Structures are given as C-alpha cells and as structure tokens.
Amino acid sequence: MINFIKNVIALIGVLAIVSKYKILQNIDCTNLSFLFRSIIKLINFLFYPICLVYRNNQQYSDRLTNCLKELGPAYIKLGQTLSTRPDLIGSNMADSLKILQDKLPPFSTQEAKRIITACLKMEIDQVFSFFPKEVVVAASIAQVYKAQLVTGEEVAVKVLRPNVQAEYLENIETLHFIAKILLKFLPKVKRLKLVEVIDILRNSMVSELDMRIEAASYSEMLDNFISDRNTYIPKVYWEFTAEKVLTVEWIHGLPIRERQLIINQGTSLKDLSEKVILMFFNQAYRDGFFHADLHHGNVLVLPDGKIGLVDFGIIGRLSEKDRIAVAEILYAFLERNYKKVARIHLQAGYIPENTNLDLFSQYCRSIAEPIIGLSLKNLSLGKLLAQLFMITENFGMETQPQLLLLQKTMIVVEGISRDLNPDINIWELMKPWMKKWAAKNISIEARLFRSLSSIFKQLVNY
Image (cartoon, rainbow, N blue to C red; front, side, top):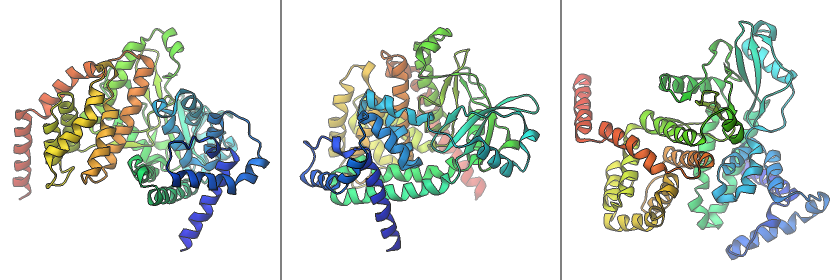
C-alpha cells in the first residue's frame, strides 16, 4: 500500500512536468480509442493551471527534450533510444532528441574531483598531470573528461552523477507503474512491450551504475576485437577505475554523425556504412556479446577510418543456441521458407510444443511478405524481427529480453549505416558473411561436431 501511494505521488509529479511542457496537448487523438482520448482530455483538464503558469512556446520536439531532461535519467535513456528511430518519430523530433545523447547540463568539476578522490583514495595530482575544468560529454548517467595521467597517457575519465543511482531507480519504478496502468486500461499497447523495455532498462542499471562492470565490458570487447582491422576498442586503466569512476584510453575520433568532417578526413562513407554492419554482426553472431546502447554519440570514426566504440554501459548477450536460431530464422525468412521458420521456433523452444505450425507459418508469411517484397536495398532485418516478435507473443512465446535487445540494437545499427549510405544493400553485404558463418555454425559438420563435443563433456563430467 505504501509503495502504491508512493507511485501515485510520483505519477502526479510526472504528469505535472508533462503538462508544464504541454506534451499531451499536441497529441492527435483522432485514431485513439475513446478511453485513451478521455484519459488524455482528463489529464489536460486537471493540469491546465500548470500550462497557464508556464507559457512554453517552444517547438514540440524541443519541449519534449526538455521535459525528458527534467523527468530524470531513465526518461532521458528512453529519449536517447527514440532519437535513433526517425522512422517512428520523424527526423525533426529525432534530431532534437539527439541532444540527450551527450549534451546535457554537467554537474560541477569540483564535485567530480571529490568523487574521484573518494573512490580512488588518491589525490587528483597523484593520478593526473592535467585534469580540465570543462567536460567533454555530459550524459544522463555520467560525464566524461579528457585528462592526462602522470605517466603521460591521454585518458577519458567517466564520473557518475551524484545520487544518480537513487534517481534512476525511482524513475524505473514510476515507469513500471505507468506501464502496468496502461496495460490494464489499454490492452492494445501490449504490442509495444512497455514492461519488457522497462525491465531491460532496470537490468541494465546494474552495469551502468557500476563503472567496474562497464570496465569489464570494455575489456571483453577488446579481447574479441584485438585483431580486427576495422574496429578499435580503448583499453581500461584498472588501477584508476572504481565503482563511480572509469578511466580508459582516449581515442581521437569524430562522432559518426559528422559526415562532412568524416569525408574531409578522407574516409569513404560507403565503406564506413559497411564496416558498421559487419562490426555489429561480428559482435552479435560471432561473439554473442554486443554493444546494446549504440547511438551517434558513442560511435567514433578514427583518422585511419576505423570505428571506435565507447560507452559500454548497456551490453547484450546471446547464447550459442539463440545465435544459431535467430540466424536460421532470418535466413529462412529471406528464402521465403515460412514452414522452416515455424520449425526453428519450435525446435528452439520459443513457442509451445502444441503450436499449430501451419497456422504459425501462415502468420509469418503475412508479416514477412510486405517487408521482403521491398527491394533488398530497403530491407530491414531489425524491422522483420520486430514484426516477428509481435506475432510470436500471440502463440505463447515468453518474452526473451536478450532478443528484444538484439532487435532494438539491430534497428539502430541499420539506421546509423543508412545515414552514412542510403543506398546500402544490407542483405547483399551480409550474404557472403552469413554463408561463411553458416558453414561454421549450422552445417551438418558443425552440428555433428557440437553433438560430439556435448557427449564428450557429459562423459568427462560423469
């Protein structure tokens, strides 16, 4: 009961801020249900006095950006995700929300130094020969400084915002409460998977709010890409890393959104767009460990054309079983073999054993044909997965957070790549890679090798 009252009070606070920026006043209710229209009208009526006090005449996209800033770090995270989806919210809105990626108001450098000193148990001048007054990036969870160690190396120092843990947790609880209310009164929003998305945000909080976990993610990704010619991962300085402080190698690069500057340094946007796709597929399908918070602010382009990755607060993992299943499903879709799509779902345990496979394959056809019917150049594997997850839920598939994270990240990666080269044909690019991957992972020889390896392990354990 206490939690319920607390959540109701928090919800009223959220609605007050939303009303302050006139977010609901501009929503087109024409295609919404009567209940949804009534709820929006009631909120607008109850909070109308706030609108009168705050006469906000900014563009809607700017008001939404400022609203999310005021609501807190978890809402900012949602805004960052939306900023990578111009296909959903429009290019003007996406451009406005990109401010949330790395242009938020910073907290004081004096406070940052206090946190560093307390965490490392060392004075600033014992660690750094130079520590600037100004931040390079200020984001929702932390801010970053470009400093120099006493040993001469240039480093990026990431410092958590004060009290961000408590704020983030409060935001998540309120978002969860709002999502459950929406599901109760508006069942149609179930397809948006609000609760699942919020659960992903909650689970990612552990790694985002402990810099040591993020440092471990840097280290693992560096091991995976140590010999890669097209991707660069900065190394971690573990001796200067703690729960609230992360120190990594500084890499000199341009944000991938700076297309003209990238062209000026002699890097081909066409080649770069292909590197982005191949980099992600190597992460997700080769390694089963992928950067799940990619956006234009944390993908850099180095002078030699390599892609540099930073900010590993949110990562995704795929088991070997999931990697093989998803790859086989995508391949079967592109072959228009919908019965095979259904069989793979059953074999992977994604749908119940009593599922009518003929009906399921028919549903798969209904969502795939409009997408695959497009020219291969415009084909989005991420959108195909999104449509698939919508129908599998109707057949009793339990929510798979790791697959939702994969799908969300895949759409973002495709968006980044198409920003660089609108004419990229992702399927043609991936065909040679997938054939090579399939020969190694889903050929008869590969299956036989895995079976024998499994039997051998069982015998050893026995």
